[in-house]
Structures are given as structure tokens and as C-alpha cells.
Amino acid sequence: MTLAFALVAGACGDDEEEAAPAATTAAPAATTAAPAAAEPETDSIVVANRLPNLSSNVIVEGTSRKGWFAEEGLTVQTVQTEDVRAALASGSAQIAAMEPGLLMQARDEGLDFVVVAGHRCGSINTFAIQPDIPNAAALSGKDVLVGGVPGTPDADFRLALLRVNGWDLSTVDGINYVTVPGGSNAWTELFYEGKLAITPFFGRHMDPMVEYGANIAVNTVVELPDEFWVTTRDFLDSNPNAVGGFVRQAVRMGQYWLDPANFPDILE
Image 1 (cartoon, one colour):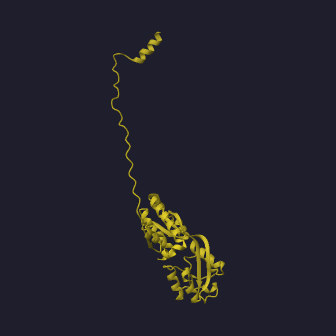
Image 2 (image 1 turned 120 degrees about the horizontal axis):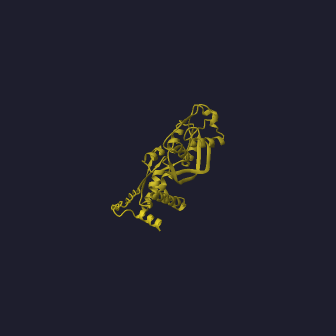
């Protein structure tokens, strides 16, 4: 009993000692700041095209004229520029129609581009050679247009097509690989003037090329993605609904375009 009492007394302390004051100030309640409101998505998109051809432009122009982009709350316009990569990277365009080779080069350069849709599949490749060029060796010292220089994806692809059709340019020294902006109209005009020994061209120029007497060295369809709709990762992350609306209506126009009954409307 004595031991038990001593333990209790020790625990209670001396009656004459002042008890420690109780804490009277509570820590302030933690407050959570309201999250910042998300930036609204864009309602305007500029699409960059490199070439003034029908298939690269009708999707955007036709969809805009139908009012289908407006259904998504979007205003969409196209611009033509030789360097769609620069337009996209600078922000002057938000979406670009880009060939696979250009996309590969952009990624090699560290540009964070994202494919949001395929644009065209099934590439028609046609090449004309001057009628007085009998073989590949005769191209030495000549200006040749293949859409790039050897070592770039697009040029290597087209050079391979020429090679399997009997024109192996890799065996010839002194070829001057040139770049010509403006599309098939500009290319064929230079070809007719004798300033290009080889040029690609679009199907609409087949009859004039044959009449000119050109050697049509390549005329084939290659089943591979020919062009993509591309944007930057930042733009996609900030505007997923706007990009989704663009793709949704572009696909709608693609389906409309492929219906032969709608060809007169498309051409108009």
C-alpha cells in the first residue's frame, strides 16, 4: 500500500506547485486555395498546307463552307507556306498537313509534333523525264527535282521508285538536286522550258506531258499514308476538344468527298 500511494503522489505532484497553463491558442485551420480556372480552349484554328492541290485544301475549305466547323464552335482557315514545320513550331498555324518525310525530319530536329489524323492514303507517284535523256548517266550536270535531296526520307522514297523503274540515280555523279516551290503547275512549267531533266507531276498534267513527248518513267500508286494532320503536343494538351472537333468534321468532309454523287459540289 505504501508503494502504491507513493506512485500516485508522484504522479499528481505537490499541491503547492502551479499547474502549467493550458494551451489556449489553436493552430489556424488549414485553408485550400481555389484552383485557378482553366484557360478556355481556342475557337480559331489556322491550317498550314505546303501545296495548293485540291486534296490538301478541299477538306478545310469545303468543311468551312458547309458550316460544319461552325457546328463545333470553330473558325478554321488555311494558309499556304513552303515550310509547314516552321509555321507549326512558331504557332502561326495550329495544324499542318504534313508528309511523312517532313514529320520524320521534324521529330529528328526535336520538334514535339503529334499526328492527330491521317489525311490521305494511297500516293499516286508520277515522274517525267526529258525525251532527249536516254539513260541515268545522261543526267550528270542536269537539274533534277525529286522533292528533296538524297538522304532525306521523301527524296529517298522517290529515288527508290525511279530505281525500280530502271533509273538508278545513285550511280550518277554531278546531278544537281533542286527544290522548286509552287506545286505541279510550277514544276511542269520549268520542265516544258527544259530547265528540269526530271520532275514529279500531278495527274492533271498527264495529257500535256504525253503531248510534250515526255518519258513517263514512273506512274504508280503506293499504298502508304501520304499526308497527316499534325499539331504540337502543347496545342493538343491545351485544346483537346477543339482538335477533336476539327478531326470529327474533317472526317465528315472526307466521307462526303469520296461519294461520287457529291463531285460537282466539291469541284464548285
